[in-house]
Image (cartoon, rainbow, N blue to C red; front, side, top):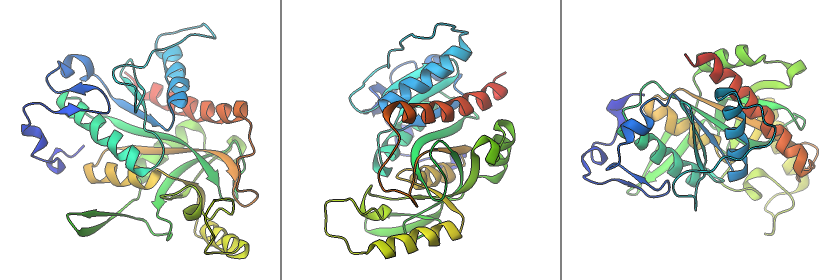
Length: 292
């Protein structure tokens, strides 16, 4: 991480309360978190529990099929687990929520004087010509205009920043987990929308549509043509934040519906869990290679 990019104001706060995590900088965060090397950000509290169990089984050599882990600290917004040198945390759905999570988790690591950490994001996504059960590793996050930019408005001024992921990290990860059609693991661009319905060109939302079914199909095929393999609501903000601070980052999309075939998720609950477990297991396998 490039510490020259940090906001100097928060570094001089006497008390900085990380409100959504339930921690603050008056605690001995160094003793608690200085050894952290990896942060895995997932969407739901259930996904956090699933991912934490997969990591705990490996790190602590747990052989029980069924066991429970308790999320730490404040749990109204996010569920937070600390397993070995890995933090697993749920961020909620959408870019505003994940940015809150990213801000507070990164503050936590800075206060703890953790060094050389990597961020991973695991989220369910719609595939674009990619079937359910597949994994898409994002090489570039696009906005709904199919542009590789995150736009922020700060004090009335608009800023645009690129949202590419580091190709060397993607290469390392894909080689470690076995990228390819036989493993249902693909690398491609992802769209991150601010909405689940209209911005993702669905036909089953509540509001009157500004587009037709034919225009929906044209948009999705255009996205596919330029290399888009997945649509979600988070990758754009995740890429932007990590790029700003030069944090190594990998976005892993678990495909739960092929949007060229359907707007609605067709997998049942058990099947959706299996896709998330697959993504989390790939992440754990890669992290295990890095743990020394």
